[in-house]
Length: 272
Image: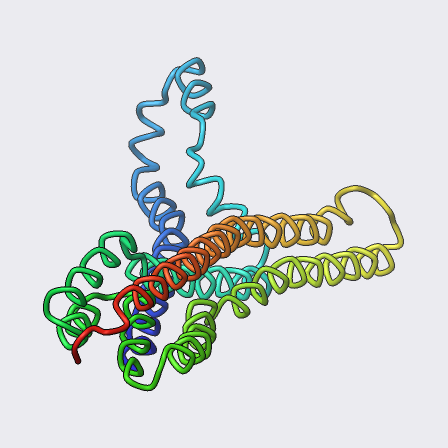
């Protein structure tokens, strides 16, 4: 429940932040036009030189301004669903990155502590060390030590079974991120098809195939595709990182489990 609340909080913050920024930037041109209207008389009195006006018109737009402009030109009907997919995907990605980083453990250090505790103080001390250490590796060790009195064969079966459960937890929500990776370009392509239909409708209504008639629908078609592909690329990069992180943790778990079983064999007479 805590993970769900944290995830919804992150998604809500990202959603409202982005939407407020877009709305605020949409209002900026209107405010600029009002300010321009109130200063018409001053501009008539003091007209800038042609060279200065040309230089002002040639000021390059920042990447942020260009991105915002193209986002608006693409149309809210198609751009906001793509933006929402990006926000949800990034929210899940952030949650997975935090979870996997917290699941990373120094396995060699933990193995040394467990072996020392088994040799000097017994199973109880080793279980306490595992209980106070975060991560799936420590949880597997604790599960094995908890069944220590039932024999090494039962310990091994318990470790294998519980390891499968922890692997499922590590891979949780990755399927949703994969869904958003596929969904973003699909929404973009849908906007492309609709834009092309609108362009042909405009040609049919005007009875002309001039570039001016076709430009509006073609722009929506191309922009939705571009933004959908950009979202898919961003999420794909994070998805591959998460897959590599999960594989690294799983390999560490398997290697540590083998060493842990060797320690139990060497200390099979350790006191409870």
